[in-house]
Length: 319
Image (cartoon, helix red, strand yellow):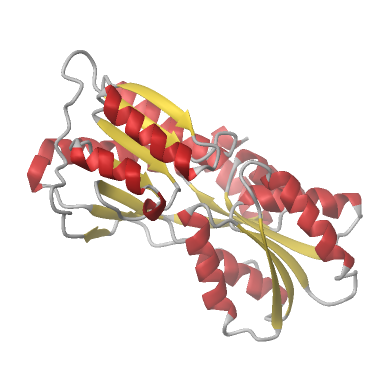
């Protein structure tokens, strides 16, 4: 079957929303010394999140800011507490990762009341959020899988409902699959932490009821790591008949695509997205009350084995 490579439209699409009453993009609470950027990561140890964190840190430090990072370990209550603590410390701006804005009510309310602008990486719009990002990789990932399966078969979908990115990607998966009734889907939700172990566990159970020769088979993860956990089970059982898909494009997953254990990943440039979030916050602060919330539509790319060499030539940091 011909390799399908999808490159999302380049550029940044801006969606302007009405500013929430009482919300201002003006910060400046840390009047003495360098400005402070607070980053609330959904979890460290996930390359996609770590890359976005590093991008924001590098951009902020280059601008003379100091940066503090909190690992919320997949817990929205810890994320809310971290945002509130940053506000109380006099942070000039805050970045949150992946947590749905709807789950960050108390933290965002505190930031809004203190007029501390918040940027949300993949978490959607919310009170006090002056910029958020969307990287719509669920559809191209699913389209690639469906094409490889020939429009039929069985899929194990590894989901996660604690992060807006995964919620959106699962929604895209469901929408695509409505046109393919010959594809049967089993869904299992992984946890943070524990996503690698969950991926392996759910794969073992699913493989037991889907033996080799039972039809086209695939495992899909709303990001790479659960699928990489599932791949460990495939290797243990010497199953080479199951296609595998992820979203993220980490160094580990690119290597897995290169060795053939991961069929495809949808690469997301988290590092540059993190930089863009910080520069957008700077613009929001400079604009003050004139700023209107923005949604930045980022780009992505499907990577399959034939594309790995060209990808690594363009991104040597992933070697």
